[in-house]
Length: 90
Length: 220
Image 1 (spheres, each protein chain N blue to C red):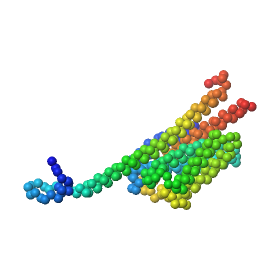
Image 2 (image 1 turned 45 degrees about the vertical axis):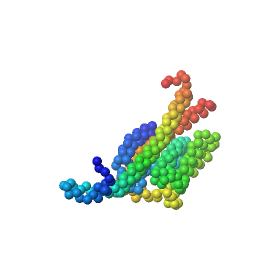
Image 3 (image 1 turned 45 degrees about the horizontal axis):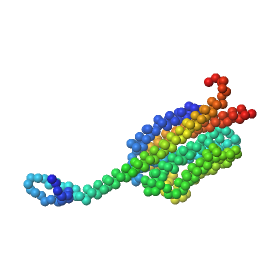
Image 4 (image 1 turned 180 degrees about the horizontal axis):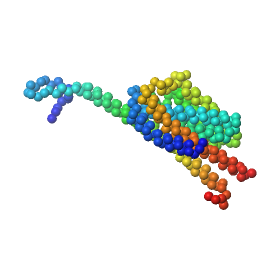
């Protein structure tokens, strides 16, 4: 089982027993990189949420207007049918 | 306007939207400063252009109706006026969402935002007055549409005249080709959809006018 931080491993003295020393990045760089990655991931997630809201609202408004037009056409058609004489051919 | 025209426009809008969305999200690079949220730009800006165009069409048609009493112009003014409300609502809702992500606040009361909100309110008054106004209010409504059309140059030049949070009008010219080509590609389904909606609404309005004439003829 490995114990200690990566920076401690990197700073370990050469053993001289045939094993090659592992040279890792220091812990501070790794943590900094992870912080930047986490911030970028949060920004991208927030951006996607904003995009979904924007596009959803945009097309919902258009869809509502199409529905309004459709209902208006139906009402107009009913009014036109009401204007026709009862004995008129269909 | 024939029935085939609006059908073609709406079918074209439906056919063009998927490739436009694919191009926006898959083929266009992510803007360096704003990040992914800048993708809202590709539909927010064309919608704003269509809103301004519809407002000008409505204002000009209303002016023609005022001077020549053309019923076709009256129908076009009403159809375009309603579409200004639809596109205006889209612009005024997507803009603050984009602003919230990039500026940190949805509304900054800058000149472009205020003049766009004013356009929306003027056309809301126009549509309401035409729908529920008493006899004789048509002329007042037409004057409102003309006033609304005069607001369009104010919206356009607001970013040049006043200090605003919006970018200047020549921002499109400064974009890399991959971005402005996508912008114009995204404009095509929006423009086709908006023109199709105006065409449908115009036909409905003309049919309602004919029906009103028939009612009046029957009354006599």
